[in-house]
Length: 283
Image 1 (cartoon, helix red, strand yellow):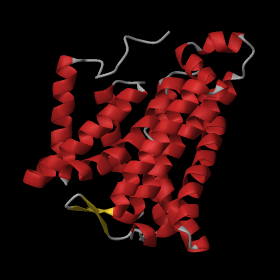
Image 2: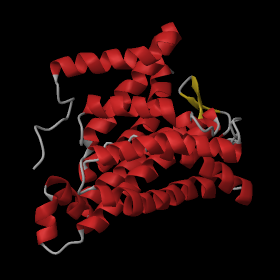
Image 3: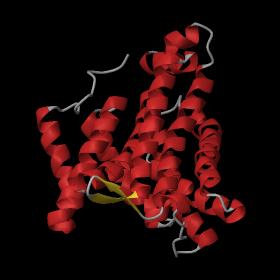
Image 4: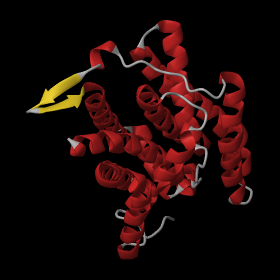
């Protein structure tokens, strides 16, 4: 039972960590505002469900709407800073992580907004003799589908292969006449869209609240560092490990579940300083 619960929690970590990995790998930006986009995804699903009454439309809209917000943020706020000191984008995203939640408190108030479970995913399903929440099983399946689609996109599509090439050597890609700036925008949009999807699927379990992205941003960075910066396989592996750690430590000593993830990261980095799938460096 706790293995499955850990898988469901790890699935949300995977969505967030994959988004962080794409943004860092492509733009070389440590996105401290990643939790903000996670939070915006939760509010987006709440608003769209309020307007349409459909959880499924809300789920799809949350990723798309937030992805578009991310694209605008990359074009108008981050892009002017790329030629300046590398700390500037970092400070900008940090400022985002502070300002946007306060803005959401002004607009929506301090009380979290409840998002109902879709009727089809309410209740439990028997896995053998184990009753397991349908919604958490849905999160596991959805994340598997999303990550498989993302892998196919990056490995098989022309745009995905260009993005991978730009990750390794953006100047070479630009010399071939490809609009690297557009590739960066698409990559950033996909990254924050994944974070928003994580927030949208988490909303029925935790409610949409302004500060919901703060804690999970730190945990997502732990997942990325554990798996290895810039590695999608590392993000998946790190998410699965941290999900299991939180699930099993919560079973015996819930107050130490958050501390445990840092202990695991510390142990892994002692053995592999670059993380489980970290590379020596990029050109």
